[in-house]
Structures are given as C-alpha cells and as structure tokens.
Length: 169
Image 1: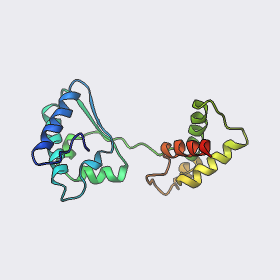
Image 2 (image 1 turned 90 degrees about the horizontal axis):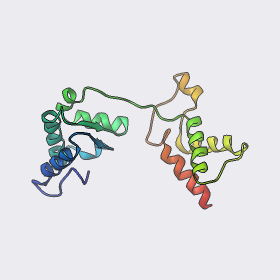
Image 3 (image 1 turned 120 degrees about the vertical axis):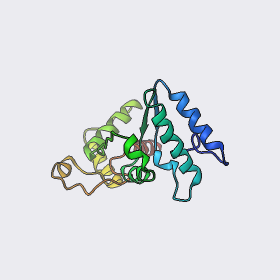
Image 4 (image 1 turned 90 degrees about the vertical axis):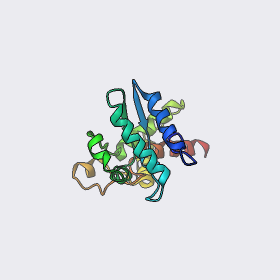
C-alpha cells in the first residue's frame, strides 16, 4: 500500500504512475491488493485504484498486472470499482494447501535448516498443523466437505512459524 497510496492529496497518482512505469515491459505484482482500499471513506485508496485501472487500460499492451490476495477480501476489492470487471478478464483461485501438504512443507522446511523430522514425528507434525491452521485433509477436500478457507487454513506461513517455534523451544 505504501508504494501506491500517498499520504497527502495529489501524491497517490504519482506513486501509481511510478510503479506502472517501472513495470512496463514486465509484470506489476500487487500482493494483498485489497489493502489498497481500506473502507469506503479511503479517498487515497480509491484514488490509487482509479489511477491503476486507467493505466491498466492505457498500457494494456505494455505490462501484465497481477492482483493477489485472500479470496474474500479480493472479491470485496474488485467490487469496489466497476472498472475491474472489464479490465480484469482472468481470475485464478488457488486452493489452500491440504493438511498433508502442510506436513510435507514442514519436512521440507526442516530439511532446509539441516534438520529432519523422524518418521514418528511426521504424522504428529501434520496433526499439530491441522489443529493450528484448521486445514482440511485430502479426504475431506475430495469429499467436498471442506468448510472453506480462512486466512490460516492451508497457509504455508503457519508451517514456517511452527517449525521456527519448535527450533527455538
């Protein structure tokens, strides 16, 4: 947000232009894009979005803009300006990691730290991550019974934090 939204009137458009110009010939990736607009009264955030939409249209042959973020928040963000509907023709929703995926990430993360999980501890680690994140198992996902994503479900960051916490303990 700080790179695209100004702190005073008139600053925002320049920041958006600078970011778009720097990305020309490539990709402008805006992670947690929904944070650009923080409520209906956020005039600077709305100014950033208006300017971004305008430049996306003007420079559509010069760059790709990727807006990323959590599904629910992104939908609210996209709904904040009708211009998104026609200018964001492609949308990709990525599934959360399953509990089993998170367990594999934990094994990988410990390996990167020149450590390893014992065979006995691997399923226990997956159980711990299940409790921490609320992730869904592959069986539950396959049965269509996963209750739906939250910010913590299937989140790789939760694995990193858990592994690092275990190392410090």
